[in-house]
Amino acid sequence: MPSNITKPKCTWDARPRTPLDYLYSNVLDGREAKDALEKLSSYIQIKTVSSEDPDYNGVGVFLGNYARELGLEFKKVQLPDFPEKPFYLLTLPGRNTKLPSILLMSHTDVVPAPAQDWIVDPFSGHIDDDEGKVYGRGTQDMKSVAIQYLEAIRQIVKRYWQHLEEMHRDTDQVENTRKSGSARSGEYLSSPLERSVHLLFAPDEEIRSSVMSTFLDTELFKSLQVAFALDEGCASCSSFYWLHYAEKTRVLAKFKVTGKPAHSASLQANSTGQRFAKLLSFLYNERNIQEKLMLAKKETSSEVITINVTMVSGGVQENMIPPELEATVDIRFPPKYSYPEINRLLEEWCRQAGPGVSFVDQRAVSAQSVCPCPCPNETAVVEPAATDKWWTLVTGALEKHLAPPQSVRYKAAVFPGASYAQFLRARGVPCIGFSPIANTPVLPHAENEFVYTKEFLRGVAVYIDIISDLANSAF
Ligand SMILES: [Zn+2]
Image 1 (cartoon, protein in one colour):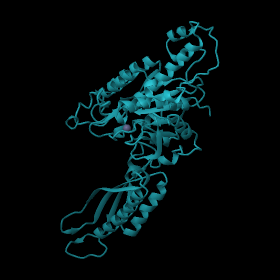
Image 2 (cartoon, helix red, strand yellow):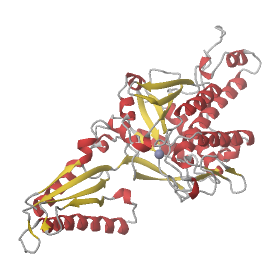
Image 3 (spheres, rainbow, N blue to C red):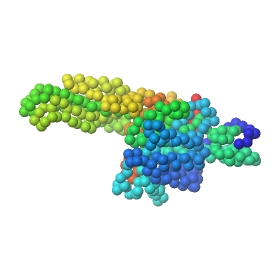
Image 4 (cartoon, protein in one colour):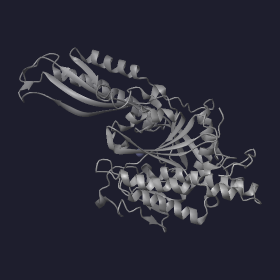
């Protein structure tokens, strides 16, 4: 590395200059687009079904090669308690390593894909040029997002070098710097971006193991000083993108209804069954209210409370009024309600249905080691409002794509499922869930999951802006 290189002020900007440049074909040339799609196909081919002996080491080889190609730092992290569940951390160090970093989160595992339900081999990563689609388990959830992050970083680094070459056309300094290994090794401009960008590839998201929680408590994670994270979001069958600023909180309530056992030929007053019926009437009454709310406001279920009885058990013998009946009820609520508020409601139902009626939140009891739940939303600090600096940066980057022909719109929403974002939020890391997959049937966990190549490539262009704006923010 030559030491006599001068340090010009950085005027470099990764973003294309004119609205028309946003055409994905201008962002990635034909060769790059083809390579990016092949990368996605190769990633799909690494079979990482978390419940079926996932090939996480294969992921490591793939990402190690990718990191070398892009000049990124690469780390394999194996936690002592989970040697078979490696994390991979790829880093593009920023110019100012004192600034907290940006985290691009993705999970490496996928759910099973029974081959008989598919029109192609779900792990072939089949690219259908006629239909303009890439098929495979994980194309939506969420291997496409991981490749989009990486391809956006590739473009950001490439444009940085092009900029340096334009500035120093008549010297061989750029070439010397390039030869020395990576984008970060230059001394006059140490990195294309101000903040460091970390790409974290995490295992076992689909089976909710406690490995992520353990990782987030390591000194390594703390040393990354993450200021803000992006994680997965929902695909959208319309022309807009979803931006998820929070997740629903889940209460897994096990209701216990007790009463005096008696002969089932009697009409015993206030029997166990009557209390049980009363409790169910409260549950289903609230469920009906929430359903009406959802339909009236044309909202998705992510904006209302969902309540479903999922398991029922009890009874001793067919001719006995049972001394005990139990019901497991899955309740999920958006952040406009609080955990204590929901708890009070359940307690009130028990009181009115009782005596002898009580409940326990199974998730709060069993999930202590998984996550400091049950209130992850209380620390979800991204607000979907102009006053929130992270929200403004992400939406501002998206708005640069508002010009036709690549018009992009977005909607704020609570994530209807669960993702690793809740673990980050629970530790105070603001996080937005976002997958740039619009105009596409929503197929995570479904048969014949695919992404359109056009949408996939547009997502790369969108991430160039989002990542650049996040990592160049100075607050
Ligand atoms: Zn996912």
